[in-house]
Length: 153
Image (cartoon, rainbow, N blue to C red; front, side, top):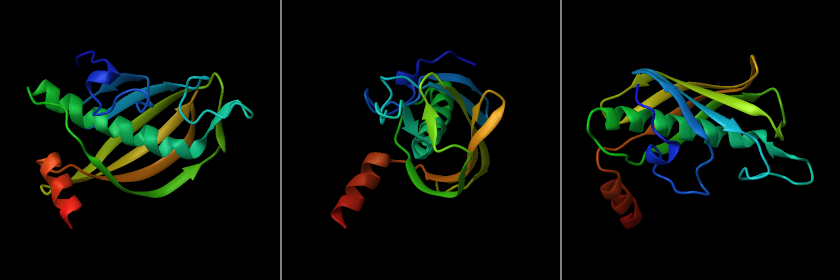
């Protein structure tokens, strides 16, 4: 496993990078960490927290990090993918409080030849699962061409 900075594995730039660090990855899974602070996107200063629905983006960015580290390990380049849907998004908390460290785990369940994949995702705080979902993503072979085709429709 290489130690990639998160900026090198996501097709985003700050401030839209919401996860802090790629902690671990394997051919079938990845793990990122998020430290909730006043700098966090979507931070609510009145509540000293980030709403838990932002967890879906933490999961999506961890999936992107997973896909892109595998590409980089094979000599490829970072590319775009698309969040298609989330199923069974359940949360045990309404917000992530200031100072909370979250661990986002994604595990590949299914990958189709057409670019569609399904991931089992959880977000943990300490040893507790606070958010869970199944996330469907689409990763076209040529994302820029796909975007142009969609814009022309």
